[in-house]
Image (cartoon, rainbow, N blue to C red):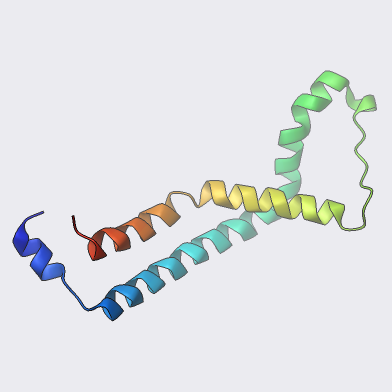
Length: 106
């Protein structure tokens, strides 16, 4: 990066903060879309993760019970959150690091 590029990219602090805010919103929207997608397929994701245990223990010995009222929903939500973090990982760092690189040239 040359000195001319650095001088051309200089902007007031508020411009950098506005750009960072827009990039964070885009990253959160990407995470939200991935969360909804993963929540829709949470049962299938759960079956894939439980399959090795069922394979070793056998189908008759692998009955799972839920002891709390919302435990099944919380489990699906946790799987969806983890899956959304996994799927949206390329979007979040790419959008936020670009903003940080522009505001702090070294």
